[in-house]
Image (tube, rainbow, N blue to C red; front, side):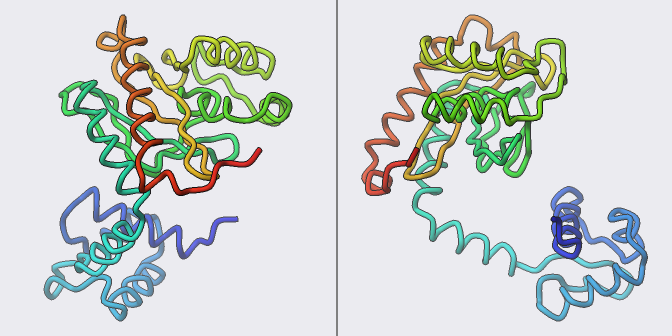
Length: 254
């Protein structure tokens, strides 16, 4: 169940992130598709809490540094997140492509971290983006971490949909795909959700958290590099697994 007030707040923060400019009551109301009265109540509440400020009379509203300071403090308190992000940055520089860390949420994966390629033509994704678990290399890598009996149950429980011609949309085919990928040692997505994009991934288990660590880029740059990129991801995972900050976390359960 979605709490509408929280949903509206996150939409508002997303609006400021996209526009990077003050927004008036009318502009916020239109962007969020909310009545002006409801928008006014949201803005007044955030004003009172110091989250936003009024730039000037009828000049609009903009966030204060409060959110930045809070989120930075939260991030600094998570040593796992910090260490993993540094590794993602290094992998992105090494491969020249976008690097993604995905976690499973039911039939989807959500990107919990992302470092985009510096190339002009690149796969664009950001933390919070969602993709089908069965149509992404990271999702397949996560599904592979379950013991075989549970994995078969998980695959049967997924609600599949065909997004593109190459999308795997049934449990039996996905079972064969994962078995082949496990033997090969890495997982791939060949334009199964996003056109003209290839993803290569391996599973990363930190404590009881299952992730898919993937590198994604346009087909024309990824072609012929699958094994090379898989080797780079493997090295990154080995470095993370030997990192003393992460090594004290308990192993994942079944």
